[in-house]
Image (cartoon, rainbow, N blue to C red; front, side, top):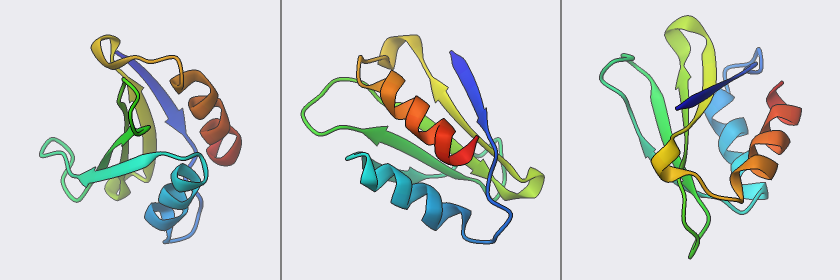
Length: 90
């Protein structure tokens, strides 16, 4: 697994801004949470009809936003998506 830390915006609309950026990139967004990170928002990001799942987590308690690429869920589309999101949140 590879973790990519992002810099969340200073405002309270991190979820909305992150999801908007993902939609602009053509990603399908599946929302959830992680028990390990209370009050977190966790996303599985996919591109319809393509292999691979990019994961992202917003943990407001620590003001932390990151993406994770897991070896068994990697796909060719992820590198340009990760780079684009790093430009917006890096």
